[in-house]
Every structure is written in C-alpha cells, then in structure tokens.
Length: 447
Ligand code: IFM
Image (tube, rainbow, N blue to C red; front, side, top):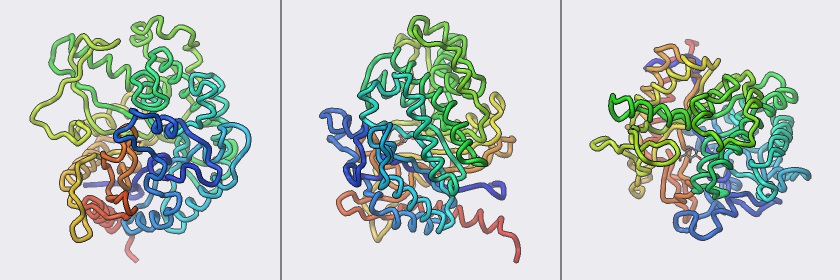
C-alpha cells in the first residue's frame, strides 16, 4: 500500500466519551450528563461520569499513544469544562488541563487535532434553547476563539464540529442522543445554526491563531440503491440528500440542495435558508467519518419514504453496521470530484465487536484487525485515484462511553477494563503499530 511521505497515522477520541471527572475542578454540567442520568436513555443507565478517567490518566494515555507510534491524536474540548455556563466566566482549571494535554502530546511528537464540538453542549446553554436558539452561533464562536487563542500557538489543526448531522437529527429528531428531542423542524433549525456557527468560527479562529489549519468533520455514508429501479435510485438519492448533501452543499457551495428544500417544504418555515451561504467559508481540510454503507429501497417509512435494506451474508459489526470498505473509497473519491476540498482526513473509522477478555496481556480481535486493514487499503486506493488524503484516524484509541449504547460497545484499539481502568492492547492495536512503523521505515530518509 502506497501512502505519501507526510501521511499522518492517528487515533481519535472525544471529551465526554473518555474524560470522566464530570464534577471536578469546576466543570459545568453538559447535556450528556443530564441525558445519561435520566433513566431509560442509555444502555444499563451508563454515564460518562468516570468513563476512561482520562482527565487523571492523560499522561499514561499519551505514553500509550507514543508506544503505538501514533503521529497524531484527535480529541475534543469539553466546552463546559472551560466555560461552565457556556458563556461568561472561564474556568482556568479547565484550560490548564488542555494546556497540559497538548504539551504532553507535543513532548511525545504527537500532533494534536482539536475538535471544538463533539456533542457535550453546556446544559446551561440547552436551558437557553441550545442549538435551536440563533444565539448559539455567537456562543460557539466566542468559545472557539477562546480556545484558539489559548492553544493556537501549539495546535495546528482545528475542527469546528463533529458530525453536525448527528447533533441535529439523532439529538433532535430521532431523540436517541442528548437533548433527546423528536421534532423534525427543530432538527433542521439546529443543523442550520450549527452550520452557521461553523462559518463564523472559522475566521474567528484564524484571526487569533494565524496560520492554523481549520476544517469540519462530516459523517458520510455511501448510499447505494437496492436495485436498478428508478424508485430505488431516487430513494437512495433522497437519503444522500438528507445525510450527505445537506451538509456538503452547505459547507462547500453555500446552499442547500434544491430537491431536499422542495421536499421538506413547510418543515423549513422560519429559517432564512439563504443565510447558509455564510457556512461556505474556504476550508483548509474536510474531515470525514466513515463507518458503513447503506443500501436503500423506496418504501413507506419516514419523511423520506425509504427503507434501509439489510444485506444478508455480509459481515456486520456489533452495532449492526455492514463492513463495507469500498464505501470509504467511494466516499473519498466522490467528495473529491464533486466538492474539491483542498485536503481530506479520515477523522474516524472503526468497528465495535464483542471482544473476548484479555489473555496473557492481549485481547484477540481479528475482526477489528481485518476491518482496519481493509479500510486502510481503501484509503490507499482513493489516494491512487487522486484523492488529497492527508491522514487517517482510527476510532477509537480505547474503549469508551459509546453514547446511548453505554460501555457495551467497544470500539477501541486498546481494551479498557472499566473496573480497574487498566488499558490492555488489542491485537488490532499491535497491527496498527506495525503498520505505522512500516510506513515510517519506508519513508525515512537515509542517514
Ligand atoms: O463514538 C462515536 C463518535 O463519538 C462519533 N462517531 C461515531 C462513533 C461510533 O458510533
């Protein structure tokens, strides 16, 4: 497999999923604290109160990254840890934590990639309407500028939002994520404000931290029609409009796709759709999170009149997601051709499996290793087709709080024993370590 010289190999996490220390050192409440403490919202009633206790163990975790040879680490900032009420008073202890984390990474030659919003909105802002309130654009921009001012001398890569589709629709339409709403119009309002906050935050970050690279991360799916029928092809196109084009068109073209706007009709009432042009600021890179494809048929379900077809006989992960590495290549090539981003990163890719307990200090996870190998291969194929892919981040560095699924879904390269907080490498982590080492060896210049 051929990768360019400066290709970065990394792993990703997010604040609420790993940090724990939910009530320490002045951290404010976030919407996931409230949501996960509300009975019935998460598997087993699990919460992120302790998670991987990374807040206390970050040094050990950075050493672990270094032992795997990671060149980059993508993590997110907990907004309520640094601004407990979301606006107003700053929490110095929260800022200090991220200072220490960044310094520790740099001391180990690991490049920090910071995501500003990975779903843990301060509860105080939710109480003021959250992302449904247009003021959220200014709240987020001020927070983004604060962080860029504080860390911009050392952090070169900034991601405004992680997966705006999930924020809007899983949180406000399907109701499975915080804040747990089920209102389609509210979800589109949230999507609009999140996109506008991205558009405002990018120049604000650049103003206080000149020269940094700024992007956004979208979760993209390879939608394929279940048959060659015109109805199934149109259904797959609608799903693509809902999940992919709504965000890609906004960020790169400054407009929403006409077919979706027409279809949604009155659902969008009250939104000034033309203002979405403010979301289309020039970016340094696009982050793509890819997990699976979806096969779509025309059907009776939901506002899109589609149905998701389960493909029998194909491997699926514990989440029920089909393992489909070609979809990663398809998405990378498609985005390059249709939207021409200056650079791309795969900012998340990975799989949950029911891992066996550790034996002799290693967890055997052949399926995850195969998943990783096949998706890295898909990246190489995309690069060979001209995709400006600059790096790959495995999801996730270690097992963590998988949102509504709690701790039962393990996505980590590294196993976490949540009773003892012991970190135990899985075979996939060792495979990844060797892959990175081979890449480095192939590209090291002769002495
Ligand atoms: O764990 C999540 C992550 O927070 C966002 N992207 C998908 C992952 C797996 O569900």
